[in-house]
Image (cartoon, rainbow, N blue to C red):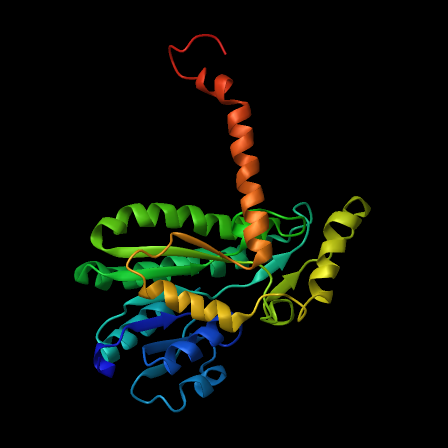
Length: 284
């Protein structure tokens, strides 16, 4: 397969973390990559040495003009976009009660509305070719909420639900949809991709404030290896039947399954009364 036949990736948020590791590994494997970040200078080193298979572009997913420009330029250079990796985003920690309105909305602009917008921009080309793969990096928080992460979890849950609908719409057209749900990984998430509004309410000292401190203290000590995660993401794009959801790391798998089992148990426990709410089923 020549370089012009290799798949074309567009990866958002490549300056650090999963995006950087993934872009580097994909390029090393010979695929073509549209490497993006809000500041082009932060990703120029990634594309150095790959003049025929990589381009570095500035992309702010919260800016519609920036999205249109990046997609148009990438498609003009490579002719198409085969794989979109929605990686751009960041964490926000505080208690639900103490959440800052501006911080909450800014997080949703990046983690949710920006992700929606870049996906809408690449879908016409994928739909026309009847092939493509939309991969969204969500989180363990997309499966289960934790104290201090209410708004971050809400943003990731939003992407998970949206992805279910997207898969139902584009699956019949040959386009795959996958949510990647990492647990804790050594990506300097706390150092570079986390904002916090301090919790000062005494009632939340152990649940919220304690977890916020622990997040920062454990940065760099996480069990997850981002290189292995990047390799697995590449592997699923090669599969003819890629997963709709894939959890990464022991914590994500263990706690994700636990939360799903809890939900099933609640539904089963209240099954009879839930069924009784159908019209004509009798008294509840």
